[in-house]
Image (tube, rainbow, N blue to C red; front, side, top):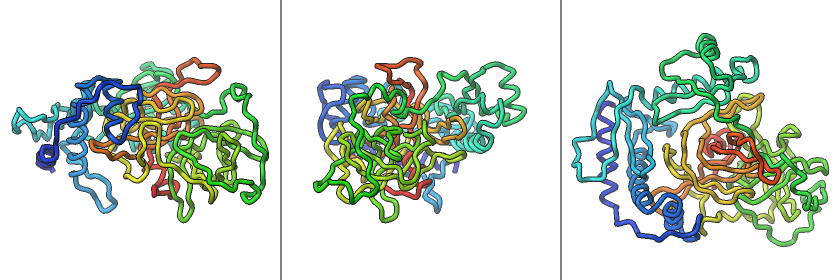
Length: 444
């Protein structure tokens, strides 16, 4: 295993060089430009971060994906990371950095310095050590969620690849609270403590229903057959949806990604869209913004100790899901969940905010919501608004392929509103692979 990382990186670099071509120089465009595939994404990178970053990023992402794809896997398909691998990330200049464990040094510096090699840095703990600590905390904190002050004082904990630690964010950040946590929950040199940057809260639409007072609530019907919809109804990721229960509007949010549950066709959204009324329930009716019934809740996971915040909505036979978003016109639903690397740029699309590009700042974050815990989610630096919950997040690889990252579930409370609508920073997404496994869903 000690020599594995060197071999994997060498193979990744060789594959990158074999298929590499000069990046296309694309001028600055709109904030989220139109176009096809990676060209549109490249334009968005240029507009947001500059041309040099965009060129570096494309090559860094290709090398990173090749490294990740060449790691061995077990029978379950899970990646088996070498013990000398400390993780990798893309920095602010768009360059790839590979972390090597000090005690198991297998340097990659023997390669030709003239090649665009990833930077390497020595760290103390392996990627396996970091994830092992994350999973221990998930179990120890999750099973005690809301049960005592020690756990209630924890806002979230996350895997910090760059810092080579697992960081626990506390509301009351002081030495006494840290000592109590170490004595009663877990004490490890891998763990660092920090003050919460703002309580992570859900971003359901039902924060200020008065702000939507121009909406005419749809008439509630008991069965699908009673809906007078003879034409095809088109829906798409990021579209506005409302939750109707017993004739009353009880919440709303955004459409996530297309999925199947057994033989049922539908889509995934956040389960907390009706959080003021006990979250989504089986049989809740989902309407689009035009007042058309488009589906019902068939499966949901938003209970204590569940690791995702998601629900599967079965769509009616006359509903057609368009697999496109506001960035480009191609499908984004057919590709597998991409490898998730710190510093990778992702795009969120929710009905309040629209498409917004940002960086992944934590490849694993677990959030201690009131009464339940969402584990192994992904944190970004994207700012979103109440109503974006359930909206899709997706990523591009170095070519024209795109893949679903997950759905928006919340973020750090910014402490202010816009036109009565809550604003959150550092938006958190439940991962699509975790959602699909928990709900028994799959992407078509």
